[in-house]
Image (cartoon, rainbow, N blue to C red; front, side, top):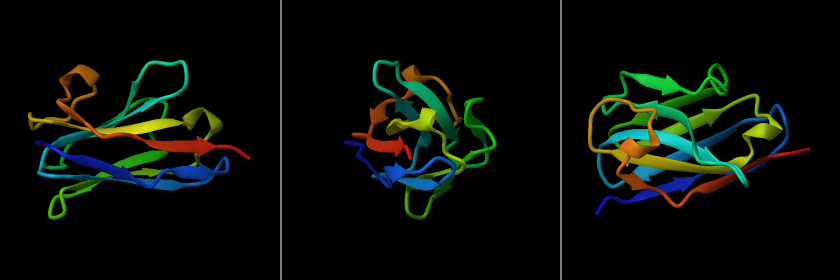
Length: 120
C-alpha cells in the first residue's frame, strides 16, 4: 500500500512563500495538484522518478519549484510570490511510471491534501 503524507500548508500573505512536503512510502514519479472551492482539481507541478525532468502549469511557472530528495522518498513544492488565486487544497500524487506527467488520470495514489490560504 502506497502512503503519501503532505505537510507544510497554512495561511500566508500575498507575496509570501510556503514549502509543501510529501513523504512517500517508496520512490515514484510525483505530482502536485490543487483544488479550489467549486473548481476541478488541476495540475500544478510534476517530477519524474529520477527528478531529472519536471513540468509546471503555466499559472505557477517561475514562482513554484518542485524538487525531491530520493534518499528520503520526499518531494517538495516551494511556492514563492503567492497570490490569492493560489488558495486551494494541495494534493501530492504518485504514479508507477518513471516520467513526469501532467495528467491527473495517470496518477495511481493520492495524499489527503493540505490547505494553502493566501490572504491578507
